[in-house]
Image (cartoon, each protein chain N blue to C red):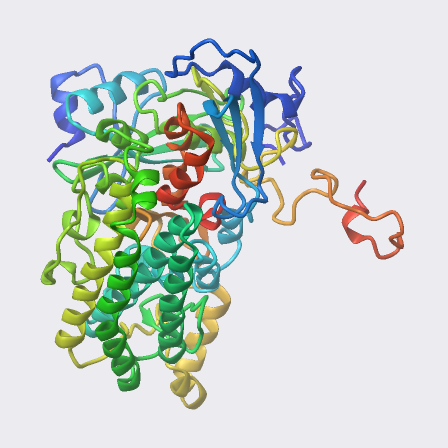
Length: 170
Length: 429
């Protein structure tokens, strides 16, 4: 059973802040150490599967965004969570694509939804929203109904403008 | 509303110099490929768009192909044509209200999504179902797996040309829809599971229908096998195509039948058992060949394993209650709501304000027919999730598509996409 304390004993320079995720190990790692920790987890401790990576808007003044990496060791069947935080004013986080190829699309989705920039990502484009979309939908300040005019909507030339609700924002 | 005091405007993405439509083509062109090309006498490459509207892309999947004649040099897939904002929606409704939305994710096996979501919320709340409820959940999840695998087999066979198999597979799925109709009241997007249990108990006529279906299943499956498994055309179109080596599959995060077709025996029902899977006897089907045919055969054999699991569950089905009864967190029975004041108040609070989940984060996943389907829930103490992330297996599986398409011919594309079995509803959320 891997525990973050074991990694800390082997390499005391790593700083961890433990997070409670019920039965699974989880820890927040500082931004400058995440790449090294991720490499160690993959090569030494066998966490070869990146199951998921998600962004999350904590709505805190300091370190607004948090990225969680869901890793799994398919031999010991253990699952751990690696977290890294970044500030709204400096939303840069090292990309883990060099460690796990599977991080590619997850990081693109986190960029698309939150605006977190992954340094070293080979192809940081938007995932779901159109490439020229100007906002980040899953941030808490983006309204659920969307922003009128942010996405081009189809319209018909003969449509009566009084009833053309979709294009009123333009 | 920015958290920095000076600004009041919304964040705007700085527009970049390369026009947006070109960026995906740039990615297509700049990709290093492992394909070695001989001299092309016509000396031109072509970019072909396998558009979102296509009969064989399993939904609205767009794939841009860079072609050298019939050979694919590189491919880029583009998602988002079915993006419905499910994660944003989840933050604005209670845990209970979200259940019908989960049906629409993997819409080929809706009840499995219900099971996964309800189990994640129950893990957050600390609820556990009584044994009867757990057995019923296993039965529903395995019926959903059979339904989904029939669709996958039928669609793959249709894409390589065997149209009859598609119709036969859908005929078997229609029988499953009839079972769900009697079991839950709804054929398709059932919304059967609830936080803490399910909408109603399994009745005897449903059990009889399921047994009759399982009795007829071997014949249906053998019919398909007789048509396909010795067919020269099918075997040549699927053997040796779309080889995904196991270490690359693990690196990409593949799970489910795709990973088991590459030789890794990873199955959450065996590795991290949930519900009552640790009491049931079934095999984890694995194939070593890593190609399209291997993934097809894994799904084919898993249908029989699911039938075996359902039979054991029906034989062992315990008596008792099917839902956890917890006044503050589980919606009470309808009859009690109409007749008792306390249940009425509890129902009112639960429907309007949601269950008061403890502050914290939780992740729970099940082995769905596509792979590991999970929910990562972040709770802030209210009845509305703060963040609800769907770990969609089709999204992760599709990541391997461009790697698999390199170097193959155009006619192999549909076989490869069919073998990955993506469902765009869950890939796009």
